[in-house]
Image 1 (cartoon, rainbow, N blue to C red):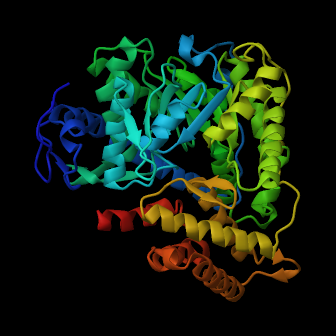
Image 2: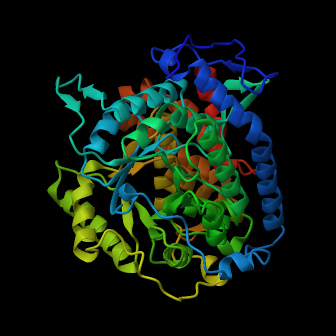
Image 3: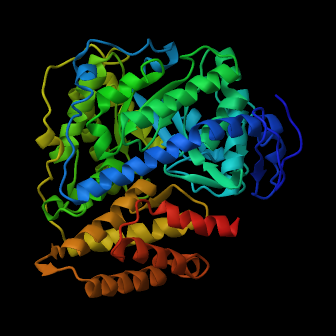
Length: 543
């Protein structure tokens, strides 16, 4: 692979000519091998070609939200009825994506990559998005770590114990999740403008590793997050086609699983698969972001007030409906329907808590496999065995693609609010999770264990969106209305508890910034689309 000096605050000539790429992030130990002139030129071509379409699609999102705020509601598209009615399937899947019964997800740090690839899971999704705080160091090191993993030269030594970890002979199939269309990479500019973060993540990984993966009998496989329409899937498909041509790889080499984690995408599952039919490897129930999206999209409707997060489970309301529709849609099109995340963390110090956590995982995975899912997600290596046990017992073959039903899932079911209550205990939990997650995110950690669960950006989004929605509609919490004054009082009380519980860690952390930011995105009258957008500005300033 071509290598050379890193381009820091300098211009880089690109194949199309007449444009310049500037790397504004500081030089790092792996910059020279990750940010090569050839790799940056490849990324620049992608950004030049597709950034204008990305910008137009984000403007379309804003137009849709304006219609929602005026009372319009989602429905299946009339103009794509023929796509839904036609009898078509996606392209055949490669051998290493036929059995995906257990997938583990996590950030792109070195320890996680080694442990996840060795975990016994079928697939590891290396996550540049919700599980990674996008500091410049995390992004560059993450790309280098993945290169080393594919070359099988990656290892990790625990400084506390001196124990060295290296790859086992058999490892999980690697998938990578780039950041969503809504995010920018402000450490890199093209013609004075920051480039789309998803193209930065995808472009560097694909350029450095696609050929090596193909030569090993695998391929460049991806998870695509937070899309809101089939037009956004069409954009990714066109990105794939250009990238494959540039590296002289056949169309269809790339395979991508789309996370259905926004409310509008649930109404366009067929269309999304159709746009990516040459490159599709299925759909996934991104349950946490889906809850957040439901709140966000319908935030101005008091009839759509969502109960406490703990009461919004996959057997209720819109979550149950969209998971059934996802299975039905995927199997009709001959591709995998992946289940959601088990976020529990094993607790060896407390056997009873550990038993309860594992019981919840078993129940969740039993529901998924009997419903027809072809695989599931876990966040911790300690959950791989229990998830595999359930799927092995109820899914003897590599998948359940042959399990096709004619069940009709209606628009009304996809918009059904689960029954439940809103409580002050739920408010307090949202504050504790939201503030502590944001504090860790600002310090460069995107995957944080809190109260027995592995939390990422999606659950922090639910926390602040629920509070915003409750404030907006004056929700009754335990019989008393939530006002801004009550929110501020409870926030003060929970911050005092954290200060007392965490001691020096609180004093040495970034809790004041996290509290201020959480207060802003939960309490301001205007709804911030993604809390990671204002939070990212603080990371860029530090970098």
